[in-house]
Amino acid sequence: MKKLPSKLNKKELLKLPVRKWGTETIYDHVLVVPTGRKHDSGFMLLAIVGVIKNKAEIAAYCDDIGWNFSKIHPYDRINIDYHYNVIRTDCYYPSGILRMWASGESKWRGKLKVGRALSSTEITLVIEKI
Image (tube, rainbow, N blue to C red):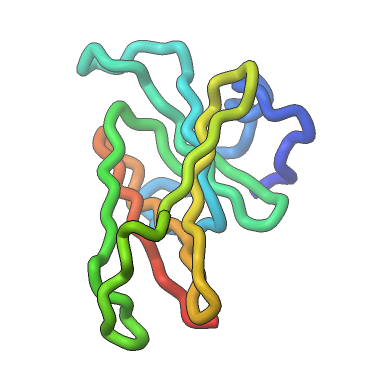
């Protein structure tokens, strides 16, 4: 991992080191960076950048992201109220880079686990007890 660039633009983010292939990592938040290149599928090749504190790496290049969210809170076995925004998204201007993170409550916080780097890469909500 390398320090997150102070200038968050596609060019700088795409210079980050690429995570070791075949691994899964839990991040504080992820950035979805359109690379401008075409995947064999005909869709845009996306770079998923994982961020922990102020360090980042390219977790995967893919053309499809699968989002996995549990309906049951693992610590008290109550249903998470999905009217409460668990996953948040914003977009850096003018680059169009999307940032996703998991909001939390007083008893838990969320992080995002990026699965193995495949054409279709899975991102899973991980709930941590505070």
